[in-house]
Length: 211
Image 1 (spheres, rainbow, N blue to C red):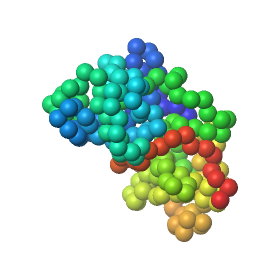
Image 2: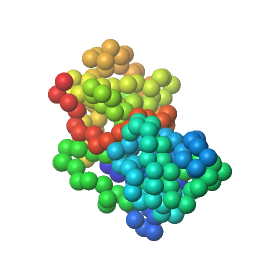
Image 3: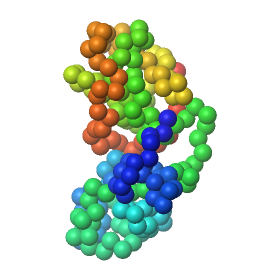
Image 4: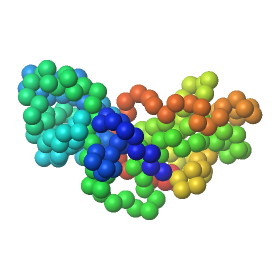
């Protein structure tokens, strides 16, 4: 499920000249006097030297890349000093969605899953899928709940027995997670915000692992 395009050069997934875009990360703190900067919420494997990214509506080439996929450091063509880098802080780095590699039938880009309603296997609404965290052993779903702390759910069949993106149906097993089942009306999917803290590098996410 892809998010609806939003207006403005820095909106998540916003079109540039009517071309659907995909955010690779957000410009963070300036790193050095040459205009290099850190990247928050990075999709590290796509942030490589030579890639053309769109920043505030302007195409710029990545002319230097250092750091790691989880904490990349970039320098962009035309951003030649610390003051210029700081002015761009908080701006998203976009590429056309059409340039992303093809995925298998049961794989999805993590950003396309944000906003899906999450219910318990017994039917009660739990919250909203707010983020997909890529971890060394298994991906983790961060579920935002109204009036309760976010719930971290390992993305495998025992914890997520139902995951149907087309039907917008995600069910988690609260008994397996040792979580209480919400009372009727206690938490409604969509009440909780879908935003959140910066995540590690997130690549294509498949359907739940078999465990």
